[in-house]
Image 1 (cartoon, rainbow, N blue to C red):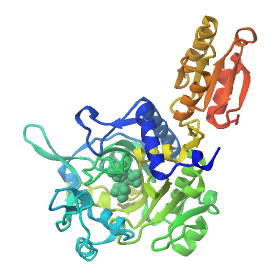
Image 2 (image 1 turned 90 degrees about the horizontal axis):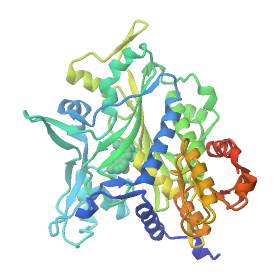
Image 3 (image 1 turned 90 degrees about the vertical axis):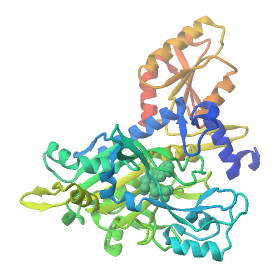
Image 4 (image 1 turned 30 degrees about the horizontal axis):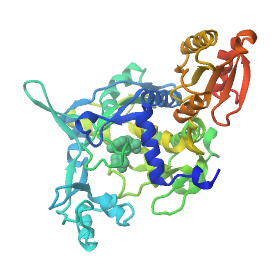
Length: 501
Ligand code: ATP
């Protein structure tokens, strides 16, 4: 095995992942037969299963952080006033530059970042224009001159009904939770903290969605809005549980990732305990539940200019993507203060404050926000492995789209086929499993390694007599014989991670 056969450069890895994605059914360009449209993808059968599994894992973990965290479902279409109150109509803009010659459009901050300016997002429009002129930037497509950058609102406007009432496709799930807060507060016995989670489609008219699956115009977010009493921000009932945990953080305006305990983050950086508790839980989710290697994970603290004006504290969750050439955002932890409920109270003129033990106040919001599709893409990027001429997707079993593949060793042996199909039908009651009788056994293993199937079961000539089968572990190719009657129980333990192979 040479180094060359095992390591792919960034472009080769990207091409390989995209080819597996479309050949095997993870995702495809939407409306391919009409030439597709940038920023829109369709999940195939494996991709949809992977996405479902990620969403289930997310729900199970985050809803269990507190007994008063619940999932709700709101709407993708919301009336204009919602976005007046939230500030999206005024502020949900990206800086657009256009080529005078070929009319191609780009995000000004992205062009400047490609030219070496770190965090260009933080510059004002005037500063961006000055930099574009000073650096003599031209259109990356045709070399033409660029028109001055201007703000471009990223929401999709629509009209409702005959009267044509102005509304928008929601660019984040969060607003649905803010609009429902007061109803849910009463429905859940008027207690704080109250967490409202939404997993749903959102829509952003991104200027240049050119990073494949990473920057989409229609995508899914999983967000948890935690409403709490701001006077209690420096406490959490389970603080002791996490206070000595070490967090991996790249602080604002610093170059290196620092390892810092929750306790120290609280005492020397003055980040409140309620916020830190959730940072620690997000890190635990990625490192322990999903299994992301430590060196590929970090939080990035955003400085005052980079973060939205209403976010008092903002840490992004970043993953080092081999395909994207470095750390990229997949989520964010935002302390949004009372900006949201306060804004809706002002515009709707409805009282959104609560009264707890005689104290009347507008709750503050801590938001845990994740892009589901970016997380799905992260799984493909992180768990992709090359082995000689084959690839293995070493997905954690609980996330794998197909948990078990069942093969009869010989295609023509009716007895083996019957046993294999019986096993297939039995396991299907509990998991997504597949049955495959075509090609050599080696090819069948390779096909399943490529899509991340953790276990393959082969029914061979001994199976009828001994009532056992071979089970093969994806990650090291090791095989064991196991009684058919014990199969389901053993698989249950292997898939849940209760035992290792
Ligand atoms: P970016 O800086 O990459 O544009 P953002 O800071 O605007 O993202 P948020 O508004 O905080 O993102 O949205 C929360 C999460 O939604 C992000 O962390 C990301 O995972 C996901 N997300 C945002 N924009 C997109 C997009 N265009 N396509 C796919 N996922 C997205």
